[in-house]
Length: 294
Image: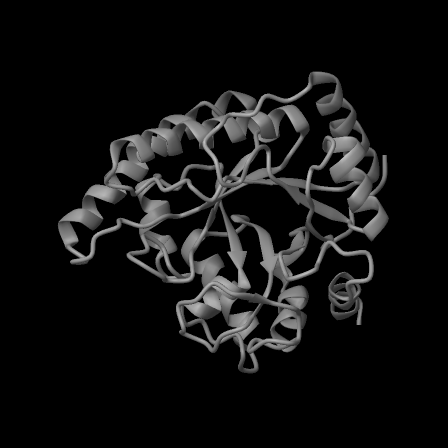
């Protein structure tokens, strides 16, 4: 079994034919040290069943490679939705993706923290949405307790602040994790584009370091489990989720160098979601490795 890289770098890849012939082959060909996949249609509600034989081979081979795996939940998931059907389907999809994580050996499932979809921005609707988050996710998290340290993490990904976000940026993690009683398997996926869009000053010297410091203060040590490494097409505070290639956006490379250097990111994978990041000739993977190793 291969030793895992201290701060493994990879990208989101398509599953294609299946997890082994498609996703894993692409990840290996690209030189990924970590990988993220969808466990089904990212824009649909269908609960896609896996193939036990393929799941087992994928789980074994990624473990042999020392390649951490993550699942990204479908984009439709919104645990704060006022529409009962959307909320119920969201809970079911999160639970299903966590089961798939166990089956394929994934370390965590990334879930967007959602919005309360209220044009008036009312406090009552926000409070009701946070109750939904608690009532929907806590029972799902409790099913992981019996798995102990082998259980996958539910990774909360703050959004860019568009719409009526329940958790936009780092500061909002306090209330969201609080709603989940800081469950021991509730972690954080820090998307650099999202938090920058929500106002985090990653574009200034020390901004990347300060961001991780704040995550550690709010969430607690060890809860930062994944970083989505994305530059931003838009300026800080624009509330727009538009990813750009590393160093070609408004964040720049400095923040990523700081993230790699922070002691709290030791063992934390960095996953690209930048335009073209899974193309054979894309430079972003090599650039991230250089920023890490330089």
